Length: 395
Length: 132
Image (cartoon, chains in turn red, yellow):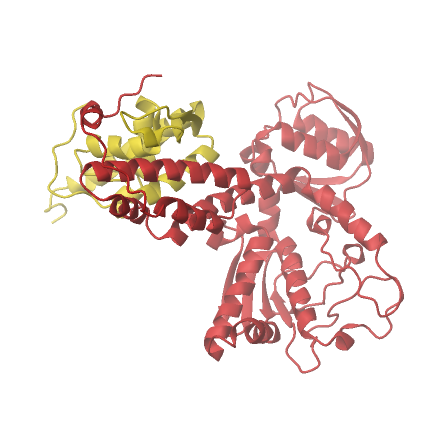
């Protein structure tokens, strides 16, 4: 590899002796790098690589400046200053890492996270303490967000079989009523008449759909389905999400007051503390619940608006389940424990939070109130370890 | 390629037009040959006759991002000695080159840029009295 950057500069460097190094000068570059890498939120190996690259830049740049007559200290300081505000630089790297993490999460959620989380949640429920008065393990089961359970069919996939053949097979095996949105599936990259080039014996309908998804461009627009016990609808998950988008309002009064008081009130005024608490909660939701789907994060499925202490969220139903869980969990830490425990909770059953429309969780009022416009709420999912509160429908 | 005439003022890195095209500029200079960060800054400055000065605070995170997107590939070089600068010995330098994916992205970005430029040109060349 031959690299010639600036022959003139190179010649001059070889002719002009570098300024003498001041042995008493502080190693500003080393000190700055030590501080900078502590601001990075990236894996250690990546942090080391970033440090090495910036150190190389800073020392080479400082040397160029010294050749132009700057002192060693001045040159080092100017090279550092040219990088801009240290925290902003670190946040640019962190932003890259966050984007990559989100992508990873998106892929994991498509291919495996669901199953792993389901197993973890099941273990959590099995190991839940049952004696009265103990705190139950409070975990959200990601599995509950997934597509509805499919009829227990056993199918086979043959290499020359097309998606249309596959659908015919599903119908022939069970006689299930089907609604297939072919237009969306074509957009997702599934040509109904192309050979699937898959071979699998005795697989479930869900496994077969996942195999088709992974082997086609549908990974980019994942397949979704709904089975209401009678009719099976297959489309893209995005289309189904859009059909199930709901506007829900969450009353965060007590949650925000509590966070503001605990974290910010000693440092800030009331209003400012409340603003910071609001930002914390919204940031938590947008990082934890389908981060790629929020408009603020570049998505196009979910949006939120805060009015006073009420949070309005327009999002697919699956997202509301998780939002509700997080807010309930925050509310639970605000409420008095005695007010949380259902009086007649049978030993060993999952802990229920909320449970009535506009129900106050804390003894003093406020807590979590919900109202929603759109489709009725999904049925409770005791298996998830959380029984969502019923919501008030808004016409 | 003929370098543009030197402008009286450098375009600041925060300029809106430039900000949206920095990746295009970086991918373009790396399409010619592998370079390391500081060399990219110098190359861009020399090719634009001093009009474009990439700030390292923008360039390095961008290189990091492009590498994560697999648009760039990198290798580390142990600097033996830079001229008679003994202090550079043992320092690591990270060289970047365009991946196949990066070349495809560059081609796509160039097409997009040209289409956008031609669209804007069509407005700029309209006669003032049209429709009047």
